[in-house]
Length: 166
Image 1 (cartoon, rainbow, N blue to C red):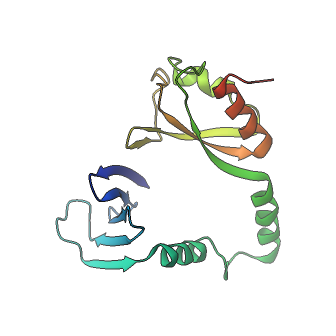
Image 2 (spheres, rainbow, N blue to C red):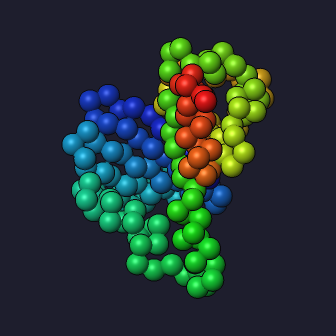
C-alpha cells in the first residue's frame, strides 16, 4: 500500500492511501479532531465516489474494530500466537535529534545499528513517508525513523539515536 502525508495549512493533515487495486482513500484530520474520509475509484480521480465524516472518538472506535477489537477471524491457535506477539512487538517513531550520531549517515549504515529483533520499516522526511530508501540515502536532522520489533531492540535503537547507548 502506498501512503503519503501532506500539510493542509490552517486545516490539519491529509493522508492518502492507494491500495493494490489502484483505489485511493484520503483522510483529512482537522486540528479540531474532526476527520473526513474520501473514497476514490482510482488514484487519478478528482471527484470522490463517497465521503464520510467522523469525530475523533468515532475514528478511534473504527480503528479499534479494524485492529480486531471485537472480532478477529483468525483460528484460535493463530490468535494466541498473535496475542503473544503483540505483547512483545511494538512500533515506534524515533525522532532524529539535531546532535544524533545517525545524522549524515547513509541508510545502510543506520540499518546496521538496529539491534537484533528490530527492523526499520520507513522514514518520515518532512511530510513524506518513505518505505523504499536507497542504501546511500542520508539520514537528516528532523527525520523520523519508524521501527518495529521487540521492545528491548526498539528501546536500544532509540538510545543509539539519542547518543545514549549503553
